Length: 344
Image 1: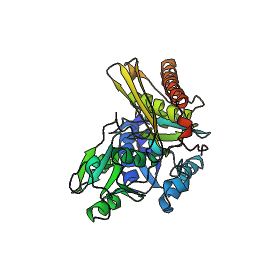
Image 2: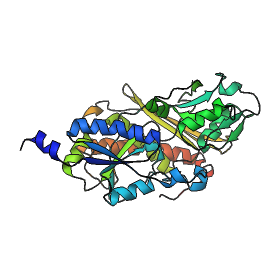
Image 3: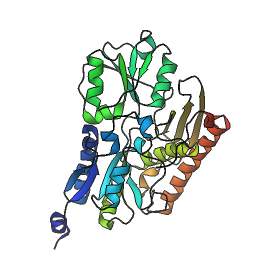
C-alpha cells in the first residue's frame, strides 16, 4: 500500500480543544495545517474545562491552569491525540507524560483597548469603566490612567465587546491575537498598546500544540513541521522569566521577547496590583539568527524536545536568558509584588 493510501485509510487525528469560539477557531487553524503535512484527516474533540463553566474571576479560580487541567486529563486518558492551547494560559511546569510538540508562528502579541469613540486610554474621563479580568492589565490600565474604574470581566470576545457597544463599559482590554484569529468585526475603535511600554503575558499571541510523550512517531514528525523556532525561542525566554520569579500565568507580570535581526530584546515588568509600583528589567543580547533549522520533538524531560544537539543548546540558551532576567527582577524586589502560586 502506498504511503498516500495508508494515510488516507488511517483513523483521523483527534484534536482536543475548548468549546469557545476562539479556541475552536485557533484549533481549526492547527487542524488544517496538520492535515496538510500529515495527509490525514483531523477532527476536533470539544472538551469542557472548569474555566468554561465557572463564572468566578480568574484570580478566584486560581488562575494558573484553569483552562488546561481538564484538557490534559483527556489527553492522558487517550480521549484525544493532541491539544491546542493559548500558551499564555498554560502553567510553566510541564506535566509528566506530556510535551509541547510545537509552537506555530506567533500572532500579534499586543493588547488592544476597545472604546466606542476612539478616545485614548490616557484621555478617558475620571470614572470611566474599564473591563478586564487580568491583574496585569488592571495594573497597566491604572498606570496609564489612575482615574478610571476597573470592572472584572469574563465571557467570550463577542459578549465583552457588546458591553462596550451597549454603554455598560467605557472600554475593555483584549489580546490583539484573539481579535485577529476570530476576524472579529466590530464598530468599536481599537488602540493597540506598544509592547515596550505595555508588555503582555508570557506567551501571548502564541499557541502550544501538546501531545503525549509517547505519541505515535508519525504524528510527532508531522507536529515537528508546525513548529516555528523563533517563536519557541522567544516564548521559552518569557515563560522561564515567569517560572523564575514563581509567578502564575495570571500574575501581574508583563514580559515580551522578540528577535529583531540578530538581537533578542526582552522587556519584563512586575506590577503592584494597583500599578502603584513596578520592578522592571530590559535585556538585549545578540543571538544566532540561523534558527530556522532548529527542531524540537524528542522529549528531554522538560516538556520541550529537540531533534538535534543545536536545538537543545538553543533552548538551553533561551532558558539561561530567561533565568537571568528573573534573577535581575528578584534582586530588585519582584517577589514582594507577585502572589506566589503552586504549579498546577
